[in-house]
Image (cartoon, rainbow, N blue to C red):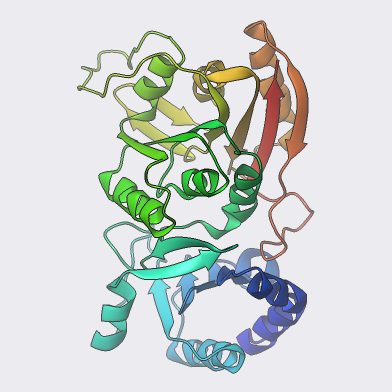
Length: 335
């Protein structure tokens, strides 16, 4: 089946969604989720005033690019940026003409439910500064942050923290190791006039979480520990934990398949009794129920309980084969 046919089908399936998000002041969403909709590794998104086409397995031919561009411009005439990320390291391989390259590297502003976010389709990192499948997480946090203290771990560009602040949070602490990501996060706070509510801590998540939980800061065997910001033990009304799939540092290893508990335990201990921790796991092969059961056991081992829980399901612009999206999110209310 041709790209034109598949994309037309995807756009038809999203017709009501697109009308709804426009009504909700949203101009960033997915229009083609290739893994499920017919072309593995091809994603097409609306990011504010541009269409973003990305490939992660195969490079598009010029004819294929032309087909996609014609279909998208029939919906809305915007610049179409193509990022070929089919190399193993996911870095962008292709060059654009000078004008489009300049546009792709410039700072843009987009909206999600009326919240403004900075966007840049090409920059020193890999992704365009906001993960669109996390929209439901930002919506949940915004709706549940009024007068609360919020801890946003692995915050990236602080989309969750910004949503919390817009939702009326009393205080938001965003923690991330990347100064580039936190700079974008500060811009997001400023765009929405909530910078006075938000704090930004550039730190490896392990020492930050452990200090906030009142635990000793340790490291991996035979690793010399670098310096890190000193934080006092603190508990929060709402904690958001969204780690990457795998990462190593002198302080520990992030491994969402084999050792989610090393992240969850200190984050959970930083959550007040009666508070909520939202946990995310983006590894497709991790079974939803098995993961939840492991979280429950960890809570019980600390002498605490889960008084309520809620699964947060990705919106329909991110379809899955069986209703189980690779990104799993659960909000746990803790006793």
